[in-house]
Each structure stands twice: as C-alpha cells, then as structure tokens.
Length: 182
Ligand SMILES: [Zn+2]
Image (tube, rainbow, N blue to C red; front, side, top):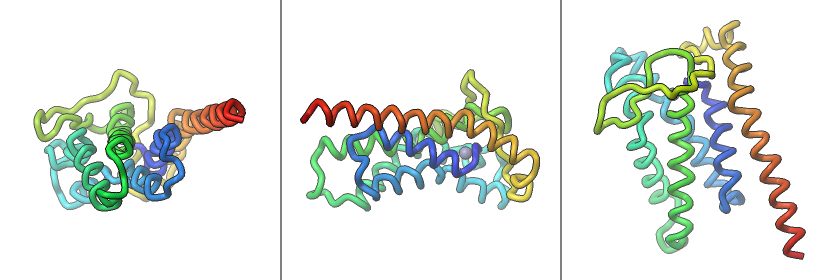
C-alpha cells in the first residue's frame, strides 16, 4: 500500500475536477473509498495468505470492488428521486476512479506482491510499468521509522504534489470561467 492518507489525497484530486465538488458526502465517500481497500490488511493479520484473492492487494483492490463500492455508496447516500441520471453517472465515475486510484497507485509501488486488478474474474497480480512509489510498511510501528519517512517523502512527490497542482489548475480554470460569464 501507499499510506492511507495519500490514497485519500489522491481522491481529492479526482473529486476536484468533477462538477460535484460542493457536496461534502461526495468528498467523504471518495476519500473513504480510496483508503478502504487496505482493510484487507486485517485478513493479513488474521492469517489469510497474501497471495490469495482474499489476501492483501486481492479482491478489495480490483475494479470489480471499485464498481461495487460505488453502486452501494450511491444507493445508500443518494435517494433515487433526488438525483438525475447524469449526476448519478458522474457520481459513479468519480467514486469508481477514487477506489481504482488506490489499486493503480499500489501497482506503482516498489514492493510487495502486485495488485489483483481483475479479481474475481481473473486471479493474477499486476504492477504498472512505473514502480516509483516506495512501498509502505504494513506494520504501524515500522511506519514511524526511517522507512516510513522515506515512504512519505516519495508519496509527497508522486501523489501530494500532483494533487496540489490539480487544485491550483482547477482554481485557475474556475476563475477564468467566472470571468467569462460576467
Ligand atoms: Zn492497498
């Protein structure tokens, strides 16, 4: 995993470029969705083998899980009469992108096993060609070590800075649009 905070930060960049950026539920569901795949670390502690589909970076890191999370979140938090089809579609794409960003960022890390992107249909672990983010330790004590610091530095470079750039560009874009509509 990259660390949970950085996954949530990545979801902010995704949320910022959608037209729904003013709804707090939207931010919360996106941020939680981006961190939630690592709940499978509980299975890791309980003895589930890492390389099984139910292990760490298994099914909760798949596109299937991302779609399931998005559908359930929309059904639970947005009443069917209250949003139109277009909004529902934007919500789905945004949540799906947030949860999938977790798996794709993990697939850019330098260690561990690859990510089971196509579970449960196709049980194989993948890395992307750009393995630039230092893998985060699963143990919390190790996280507050030299290793943890190096992980944070690399996540800052590859996740936080791009997110800040997205916010700055989106801010400029909003200003330009407001000026044009005056
Ligand atoms: Zn993960």
